[in-house]
Length: 124
Image 1 (tube, rainbow, N blue to C red):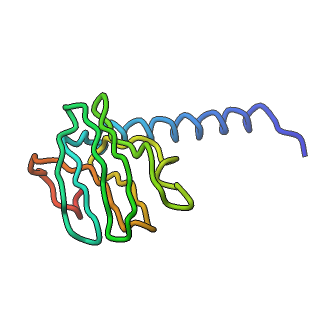
Image 2 (cartoon, rainbow, N blue to C red):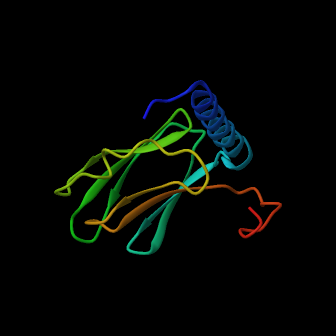
């Protein structure tokens, strides 16, 4: 089966529509957070601002530790003494609702915002 000229035009239109949809989604719904909330074993232990560079060591009950780094408005886990280190390889987070999770240490680092949303979760 050979592609014809109209097939290529259709493919280009579909790709352009997908790219525009992705760009619109990023502009409308990708909200920058202003702080990170650190939770260990379902308890909030620290809330740190994203606009201040800092390094914070998170200790869990089982003698586990994770090193949280906040730099240039984004948070990441630099070190962890767990076996898989999935949290260390996770990308930096800065948008509201993004999280880094270390399952062995029961650590969750989430980006939050103190600004009230104008729409509820269903409308967004």
